[in-house]
Image 1 (cartoon, rainbow, N blue to C red):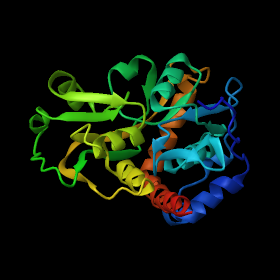
Image 2 (image 1 turned 30 degrees about the vertical axis):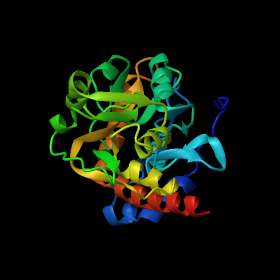
Image 3 (image 1 turned 45 degrees about the vertical axis):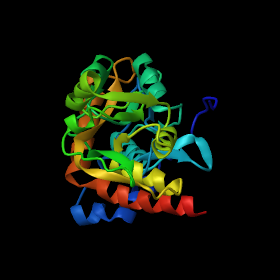
Amino acid sequence: MSDLKSARAPRRGPGLFQSLAAALGFTLALGWPLHGAQAQPTESCKQLTASGNPQYPPYLWRDPEDENRLIGANADLMQLLAREIGIPIEVRYIGPWGRVQEETRAGRIDLIAGAFFTLPRTEYMDYFHPAFRETRSVVWTRDNLRLNYRRWADLGSLQGVTVINNSFGEDFDRYARENLKMSTVASLEQAIQMLQKGRADYLVYEDSPGAAFLAKMNITDLKSLSPAVANENLHLTLSHKSACNTPELRGRITRAIYKMTRANVMQGLIDKNIQLWRKQNQQ
């Protein structure tokens, strides 16, 4: 496990926000005012720390040039949010997804930049609405395995795998616990290898991140099936134990997320980061 080190702090001048906005073309086209350029940090909150699932391209992954930092569409969104609320946000790699949740529960991480809603998670963090992205979780299997999948019950006699501490929505999580044989492993690469070697019949994971990792690992003999297991929303969350968790800041973040969602900011960020991921993995 890498030692915890501070990631590079985001620049606080207008250059970062304006360059991202200009690249996406939404500021002028949508008439979105840059209120964050005038906003000032509160006295009690000078900086926020965010993290998330580090195996989640194009949303989040480790920066090859600084592995203590996360990059991707969600990281870019945090920089736009930082400009809007007037408080710098560091997006750090602190370990696998399970550890991110543990650190957030303890208050050592302020924000999770992308989490599905589950009731247990509401015990230690607040969810911001609206969600900033809807995602699809699907069943992955081998090309040579004829898996007749149309509903969750069709998986009942098979051995499944997914990544530990992943959620696919309250309904599917409950059904899987009660009815399916699902093992969990520490990383998506490990889960993919288990599936490819026949140690599991299927993998449950999101479609875009799954496809990104298959491309990186140069694996072409796996496929996703329809229908989706679940369509779930990605939310920004704030730890209950964060020193910055105040009604005033929650209101500012909510207003900023609402504005960016209305402007459809995420689609441009995702398109940009799909290209970045491909470029990095062609080198």
